Length: 260
Image (cartoon, rainbow, N blue to C red; front, side, top):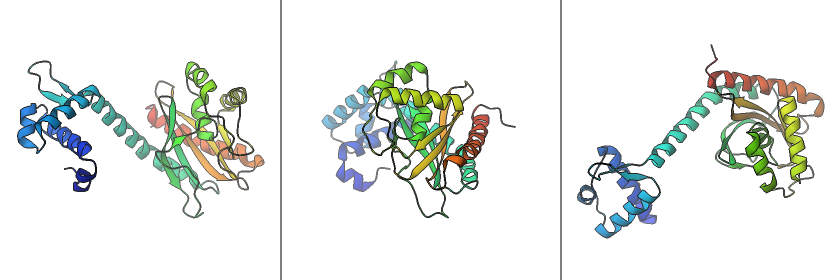
């Protein structure tokens, strides 16, 4: 049922949701059936139907021309379910990871097309400090360790296509400022198997990141540990990286179906 407050503030959006709910409940339906069930003016209804058809949210059946949920809507629903499953799978690993080192949080990042996003975050409540990363926020592929890790292990063609067009504006003294510098950094990440977020996007905050792969050995996501520059000192990075990579290996085993 559509929230009454939204019905008042965004009536067209609320009506679209009501139409989708009705189609979902009956599998397929005619425009006349919708008019009979919902208090929507006829002219408005067909404008909304046409718009939702163009967006792929609904479609007409091959026989009879009845309205059904569209493939785009099904695809979005599947993606949302997969993301939720990923959070549920990853959270226990991330909670265990933050107990291994003094840190702020553990964060999970995903690629979606040419963009990266934070998909999950587990905060170390004992520290009482959090970083700027938040679930749903887009991740810089230049200034964030998790973004660099995702890009480093993405297909070569994608990486080379994106390198010239990414945002290289300076945020801190350690920000990467050119495609050439980023290309070199990504090569180093692939060589050692993990990435370092070195305060490029947030002063005083470092992150150590490892890739997580799926059954096809393609990158699925990346998991990180975020901490202060004073805790994540150069001499401790290899030790921290080993723990993050162990966490990533556990996730890879689950996602690839190799876990016991």
